[in-house]
Image 1 (cartoon, helix red, strand yellow):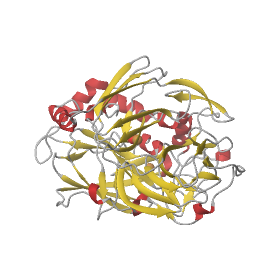
Image 2: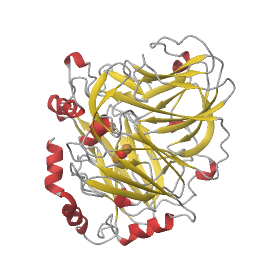
Image 3: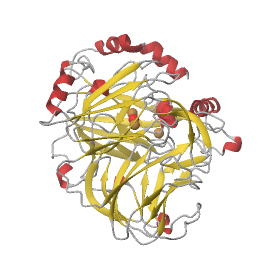
Image 4: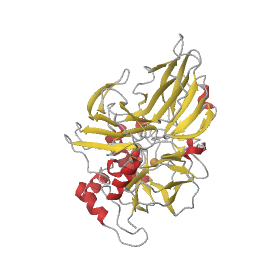
Length: 494
Ligand code: C2O
Ligand code: CU
C-alpha cells in the first residue's frame, strides 16, 4: 500500500487538502483551485434545492460482519447483515441526510456514485474530505438533483471489493411509471473471506506485477491470458471464487416473483470491482430505458454488457414459467443469477446459460440519449486528453503517464463545455467514471457517468462544467484506481 502511504504523506488529511488547494499559479485556468468548501460550491447547492423538497434521513454503520451467501459464509465488512446494504430512496430535489458511524477497524468514506452533488459530500479522501477514522462519524447531507439508479460505496483503498455497497434510487416525480413492478438487481464479484481479502489480492497484483499466477488463474494485465472478451479486450485481472446477485451464489438464488404478462422495471447495478457482466433473462427480450440514471431512446436487446460502476434500467414483459436471470462474468468463468418466477415449474440448473447471452449483446456505448436529456448543442471550450496506460512490471495504471496522486489535475472553468478524450493504450478495458457530472457521449450518445473504453480504442464525451469543486475521474476497476488510474477534474478560479 505504498500508494496509500505516499498519498497520506503528500496530502495529510484535512489540513493537507486546504494546503494543496491553495497552490496554483495564475493565467487561463491557472487560478487557484475551487475548494470543496468554497462559496461557489455552496451556491451551486443552493441552486439545486427544489421547492417542496423533503428531507430523507438514514444511518449507515459499516462494520465487520459474517454473511451467508446462500451456502458459503464469509467474514467481511458491510453496511448491514445482508447484501446489498440498505436501499436509500428519495425524489429528485430531495435532501438526503445520512449519518455514518465508522465501526470498521479502518478509515472509510462514502461516495455517492453518479450523483451530481455538492463537492464537499463526494466522499473522496484527501480531495473532498478527510478520511473518517475508526470510531468516527460524518454527516453526509446533499440534494439529489436527478432521478435515476445510483449506488454508494467507500472511496478508500479497495473497500468496494468487500461487502460495502448499497443502492440509491432517486424517483422522478414526473415519470409516468408504466410498469407493474420494480426489481433491483445488484451484481458483484466476491473474494473477501474466502482465504484472502481484497487488500491481499491487491498486494499480490502489485508484487507480482502482471498477475497472481498459479492456482488463481489470473489473466494478467496484458489481457493475453484467459480473461479476454471479444467485446472488451482484456476483461479483468482477478478470478473470483463467487459471483453474486443480491448477495447470493447461483445455487441459492433470490427469486423475483410476478404474474405472466406483467411489465417489470429492472434496475441493474454492477457493484463488482474487476468484472463486467453479460446479463440476460432466459426466454425474454429486454428493453433498455435508462443507463446511469438518464433516459435513452428505448432499445431492445437479448443481452447487455454492464461494466463496473454502470447501471441499466430495463423493462421486460414477463413470460409464464420459471426463468433464469443470468449475469455471466465477461471473459471469465462463472456467473451470478437470480430467478424469475410467474408460475409453478422446475428451477433451471444453476449452470444454465440462456441462449440470449450469445445473441445480440448491447453496450451502453451503442445507445442514444433520449431527447429530453441530450446535451444542448454548444461549441467546445476546452478539450482534455486522458491517455490510459498500464505498466506491466509494477501493476501500475496511469493517466497521461502518471499514477494518482501524481497525475496532473485537469483544469476546468465554471461554465465551460468540456470535451474529454479517452485514449486507451492498454490491452485492458477501463470503465471510466467522472464524479459530480453526467457527460454525453459525442454525437448524441447516452448521458452517463461511467463509460466503457475498450482496449486500444478511443472515445470522446462532452459535459457542462456546472458543478464547481475538485472531482475525481477514474477507472472503476477498483484495483486499477487504487494503483493509480485516477485524476482530478479541477475547477479553477478565473
Ligand atoms: Cu463509484 Cu469514484 O466511484
Ligand atoms: Cu481500468
